[in-house]
Length: 300
Image 1 (spheres, helix red, strand yellow):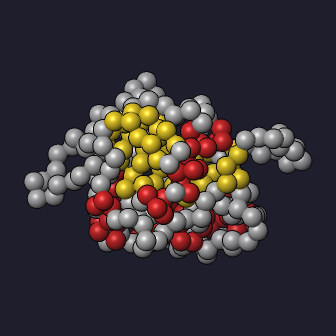
Image 2: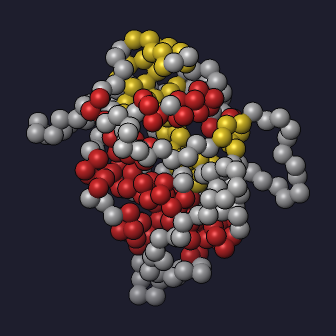
């Protein structure tokens, strides 16, 4: 499922809602490399920010001895007050620290999963390099959205048909970046935070070994698509849950025509965005994208 904050035409948003700005995607060769290590176990202070006690998250799934995986994620032991604001300040410091922040959520009923129980399967940057995002999306489109049969019924994909329509054009980046209400990123205000040693936010999914989309695709494939969305749409990875991810969009689509090919990509990566979304059609999904600065994807 892919959901977006509700919008009612003609209704003005509440005044003085706390919000954070969507940062530009910070992809820079000056960022410290992933092998610079993570903070150790214990309390962490970055500049003026106190994150409290935390520790590296260790993946406990089996790996061949020839492919060791060092922890790529440092997680707070407890929740951090004002998590959205702290996330924004940490994101601004990423070019200096090389640590990309994530708002973390666990599995409902067992908040330890996956961050504390090691339910992670890290991949390397090189694994992401070998994945073609267009091919990843085409596979998802064919496997999950096109019914089997000689003449498949594809009315839900209108105006497209059975073949994957290809990658959408880049979004124009004009005007001021959108603002995101803090409660949209951290509904409970306080949340656990993670820090990922990476060169770009999209790679965090692979380096951490996030398995939330495992019923559809793997972490390297998700990261490859997010890299492409970073480059074409300016999308910023902000939060990970057990089977959810949240993306901030600094310049969201301005109309349904612009949103439709993007909706096709979202549905190809996250089929539940279509099957459990509004109306069960690409056209309805596209309407929810217009003007929305946060995309939440849920993988069933």
